[in-house]
Image (cartoon, rainbow, N blue to C red; front, side, top):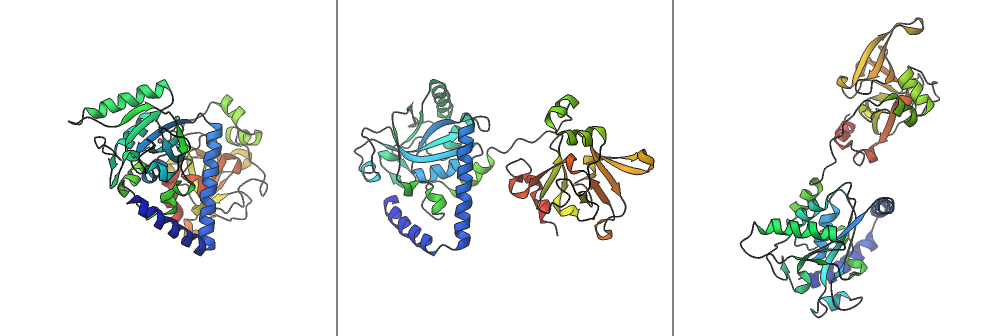
Length: 365
């Protein structure tokens, strides 16, 4: 079945490419940028590899691409008895190769045991040379490893799974002997052909997206010695010594992008761009914080004035002052905040930096 769909997929792919609009090209450009970013991650982190054979590699690759912590995938042919096989040679059932996905993952973000557990949800581990509608020894199941540590984990997880079945499991757990990258049209197949054939139910892709959520952030007040090393001199002066930066000469007074503003000392969210307005004072101005629970307001009678100081509740950092000359239609308040007390996270980065749950606030009218 998949062989027929491959031909149709190639023809459809050429047609879509030829008819692609500027918007489509932009979307593809964004995908390339994301992949480049993942390459940087792989260069900079202690990335590990594991290999999964789970039937048709189109679906298995797409499944693993949904999991947070997986930074790269590649489909190919593993553990066969020839060199540099073609797809046609593999489906001839004479080479001994299994359709396999190389999974590169960051162990600081996702655990190998979780990857194995999720993989089990995509296969029938008791089926011989068949997954979904695909039959042949290239569709056998297996987890292939490259070191002894992973071998112990893989075999232990398969033994645990076996307790849930009355029939023997047919998942290979052997070292990786060889792996050859498949032809380019197989790579990222379901990204390029969203309606393409897949033996994995669509609901499992959604499950994979949610299987390894970002840990719930915790915000803590930092020691002043730590802050002195972490912050610039101006940021330290403003947040820890109640200083004030110059108007119209600070980072965010004229920032107009969508996003969230967080406490520079703790990372805790404080203000959202939809509550920001131009007040003409030369400092970032907001009609209100995200919630009053995030700030403390204290009477300030320094410098011969009576004002209401605004401080972050968790970080106890000086932020600025609140005045009653704000827009009437926004509540009448003006939270005049030092840029040096804040860090701005653009909308496009909020999800990856752990502020995704605040994205709905940007939809306010």
